[in-house]
Image (tube, rainbow, N blue to C red; front, top):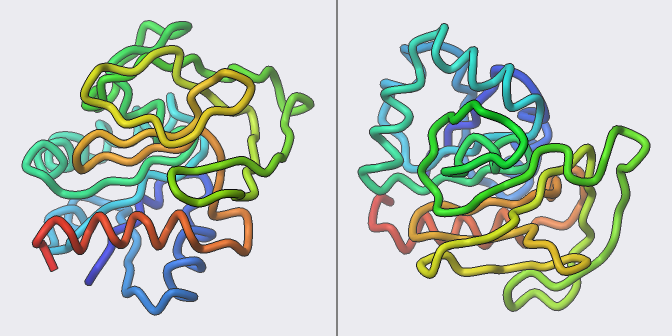
Length: 192
C-alpha cells in the first residue's frame, strides 16, 4: 500500500509520521509529477484551504487529483481537507474539489483562540481525542453521507463512499485509530 500525502502547505508531516508509525509506505505530493505516480490513496491535510486550493491549480495538480478521487481513489481530508472536498462552503464563494455532499462552514469555531480539544465518539470508536484548530464543521450532509462524529450538535466527521473527512486533526495526537480506519477503507477499495 502506498499513500500520497498532499504536501503543499499545512500538517502533512504529521500525517506521514502516523503512517510511518503504522508501517504504511507514503510519499509527499508537491508537484504534478508526484500526482501522476501510481498509488493507492491520498490524504489532504489541514492548513489554509484557500492557499491549498490555489496551489493545487497553480501547480497543475487539481484536475489529476480530482479525476483520481472521482474514479474511486480513497481520500482522507482533515480540517482544510474537509473544506477542499465539500460541495458547498457556507461562508466562502470558492469551491475546490467539491466532491462530497456536505455543506461546511469555514472557521466555524472562531479564530485561533477558539481552538480546543475534546474526546468524543468516532464511528465505532468510543472515545477519540479530537484537536480542533480554527476548524470547520459540516452544517448538513446528504442522504448518502454517513455521519461518523458529532460534537456539540455539529458534524465533525463523515464518510461518503471513498471520501473520509474530519474537521479535527487526528494526526496531532498519538492515537492512530482514525488513520487505521482510513487504511481499512483503502483495503476495502481493492486498490491494494
